[in-house]
Amino acid sequence: QKEVEQDPGPLSVPEGAIVSLNCTYSNSAFQYFMWYRQYSRKGPELLMYTYSSGNKEDGRFTAQVDKSSKYISLFIRDSQPSDSATYLCAMSAGGNFNKFYFGSGTKLNVKP
Amino acid sequence: DGGITQSPKYLFRKEGQNVTLSCEQNLNHDAMYWYRQDPGQGLRLIYYSQIVNDFQKGDIAEGYSVSREKKESFPLTVTSAQKNPTAFYLCASRKDRLTDTQYFGPGTRLTVL
Image 1: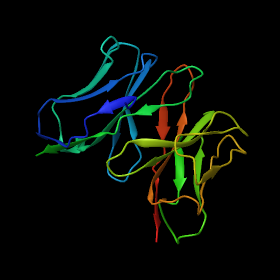
Image 2 (image 1 turned 30 degrees about the vertical axis):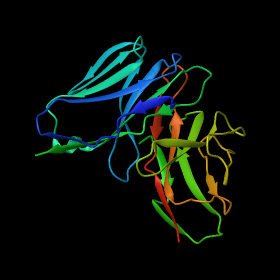
Image 3 (image 1 turned 135 degrees about the vertical axis):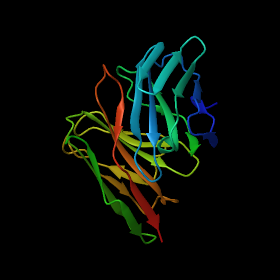
Image 4 (image 1 turned 120 degrees about the vertical axis):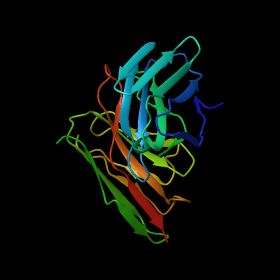
């Protein structure tokens, strides 16, 4: 079983739609949760960062962490064609544990 | 501007040749990482380094080598022993243990001819 599971998509939505991206994980020690956006042939760009459980909002983006269910989500409101990219979730236990665990990425296409 | 630079952006290599990928950061981060990304797959960890002159193997270290002589630099050598080296290589650094997150460079696309 993989440490982090993420639906690869592709996910195709019309412009203006609300997008929901999700990851599940198995390691209860994970405390730090990240979402990255990656455009084709570019390096991943940090989009959202959350520590422990709860919600975090930044503009059109909201990250949610439910540690009891081992489930994290990224919501994109009023999606734009420029949001078309691959979204990677990542997580770590922090502290002296130096490894990060990534989902395989969900490819999102926002149609004009 | 602070950040991570990788060079070159595209690299072509003949079979049997070693090649070194550059990674430099001016973020003053202690830990640095190398990942490999193949189409449809997530990031796979090759090597990581927590401090200067120290590094550990990741999940797919065979056929790769690294050095960490300076805090700012973490070059990756892809040796001829790597069976399938064509991939997109990403370098990253870790901010710190309190705000535990990673920042990535722009990547190097290696193609073996």
